[in-house]
Length: 131
Image 1 (spheres, rainbow, N blue to C red):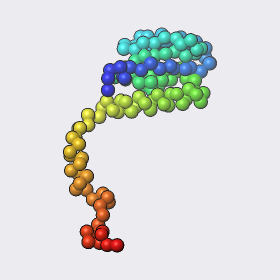
Image 2 (image 1 turned 45 degrees about the vertical axis):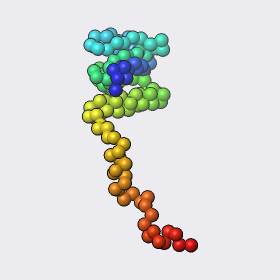
Image 3 (image 1 turned 90 degrees about the vertical axis):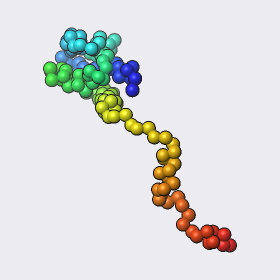
Image 4 (image 1 turned 60 degrees about the vertical axis):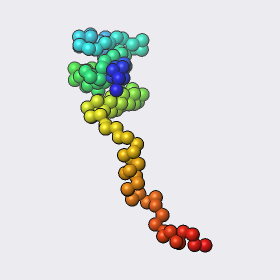
């Protein structure tokens, strides 16, 4: 996985009440190392850019929620968050797993030839020509 695939830019949407949540959260996130953040043009939203080596969207949102920030729980934002959480979780899992061994084609051909996979005709030779 390349380094650019690990860099994520996400939007965090906050509930309308209390007001100014995005600005307060931005001040908190700007103090964290290895993270960029800014206000989005949309109200009560901010964008964050981070590497999966350091942060995840789920972790950032959980930290903000534990500090009393209220995320937007509309259906659209729930779906976007769930998809982002799943994708990041899979990428992080792939980073932790060892690289798979790559076998040559010949190994698979040999295994296929010796495996009883049901693709063989068990009819005796003399019966195959019977008409």
